[in-house]
Image (cartoon, rainbow, N blue to C red; front, side):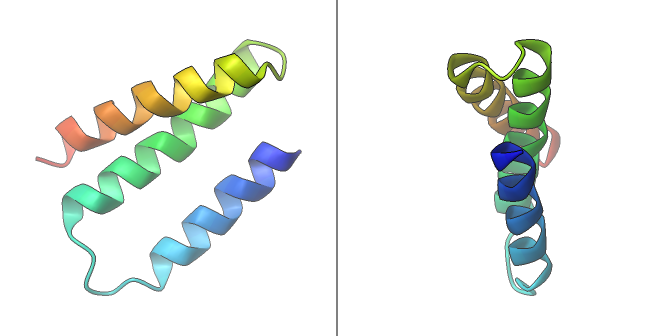
Length: 65
């Protein structure tokens, strides 16, 4: 539940950034989605959430280039 709330807050805060660079938004979005996926796949494990967020951030960075 905490992860879902955090992801929602990140998404809402990104919506307010009109001058953010595309790559920054890709990293943050990827980290949020990766964190949610890691949390879901590992049954709420903190390590799974952190690893998912890291992998998602790297993927978001690469996709936004």
